[in-house]
Structure formats: C-alpha cells, structure tokens
Image 1: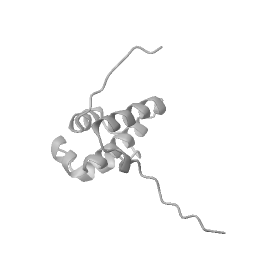
Image 2: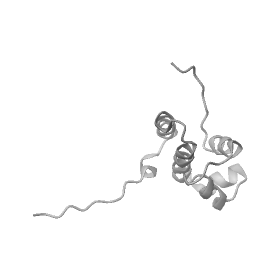
Image 3: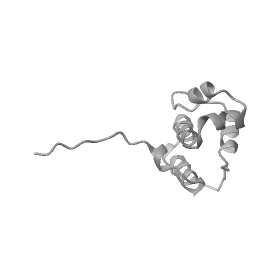
Length: 98
C-alpha cells in the first residue's frame, strides 16, 4: 500500500488578492459569532499574507506586538483592530441583522 504524505494547510498561501482577503475576513465574521479572538486570528492570517513587517510599519506598532495581538490567543483592543484593517486596505461594513 502506498503511503500518503500530507502537509499542514496554511490559509496564508491562498490569500493573494485583496478580494480573497476580504472574502476570507467576511467568512470569518460569519463563523466567529462573538469570538473576537477568532477575528483577530483571521486578521493575523491576512497580515502574514501581506507581510507583517509592512503592516507593522503602516500601523506604527511593532511586529512582536502585532504577532501577539493577532495570534488568536488574546483579544486586541479595537484601536489595534482598526489600525490593522486600515493597513490591510480593507473596510468594515455594517448591515442590519435579519
């Protein structure tokens, strides 16, 4: 029997365009419910895809603090979330719940 080799899936490899990044974040918003750390982790994935060093420069935050804030292990402040979203070139939208 032939042995199957697998590799760890990393969503970052599939986030190449701003549209893919926005679609991923939108899907995470729908999936997260009230889990803010889940959204922070999704933003961390997108930031890694764009380049954490550049996002750090654009936000004025250190790479280390960004990695910690967007690890999914803690809930970053809303000001950090807004800075990251802006640096990623994304926008937040609101709509009435159904």
